[in-house]
Image 1 (cartoon, one colour):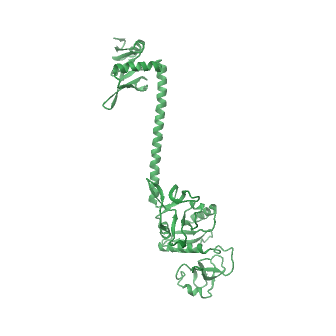
Image 2 (cartoon, helix red, strand yellow):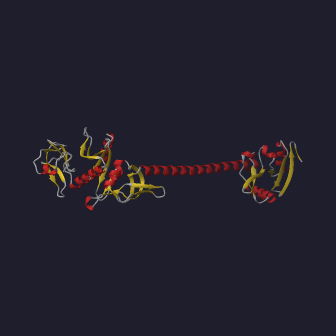
Image 3 (tube, helix red, strand yellow):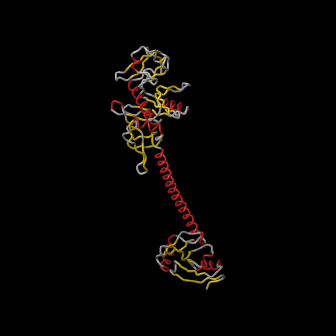
Length: 389
């Protein structure tokens, strides 16, 4: 049951318009034996009204191969509502418009005053996702936008793969969108917008106020199987931009957390290597070191603690003291090498032979403490280049 027919004198007729789009009344066509032909197959047609009083055209004979044949009353009504919505938005609406090369035929082809084209497809009959994707691609190849509409009780699986809207049936009163137009807030994520009329939704789409977007999760939007909606939906560009900014921010935070974790892991590994080298070089085991540390802290104060072996202090272990929330190095234990720091920072060793080795390395006057675990003593010596005093 098409809405369009070709008249021998008046040209193309559109039953959704009061003057049939050419200044002729419906009554003049309906009551007369007007010479009408199908714009798709060329077969003879007649003007009729459906049981609901909807004006339309019908083939005089069965034409199962005609692409306009076999349309249900529900399909006609949805096409009519889509055309009305497009016209209300200030666009021209051409029903059952075919591409010159025959690649597509739009239920409603909305045309803007500046020539932009957008197809509104009422898809009530079964269709595979592969077919609807191919038809969408054919529109895109001709730079024609498209949105698919379905009014069945449950949205079809293919609707999440292409730009589509699930709408209420006309019998339920004013048609409204059941899904999916969504808004975004950083605190709550994506959520479906409730109570949007079909006319408002079509107007927003044609005006570019909403555009297709794809996201994993939309609260409050039903999807096939009853789960929360996942897939393509419509939203305002500003919401899409806000979602991208928030995703970038969270990604940056995640990367920063991973970088901090990597640094901590690297530092932990570096400390483990430094300790292993320190124990091997000094020959001090962990039990001996604990006694050594107890002697040092008993002599210099319990508020002090040793750090990890540090290359900055000749691979020795710096002794830190905390004062006014700041840490300062007050001594270095068992360095393998000396540096400029040795002029101001005392050195702590564990026995006399190590004291002698420090003297052999000395290039300036140094203060060296001996914390001998075996003797449980803590002695202070002055070391100058060439000797111990």
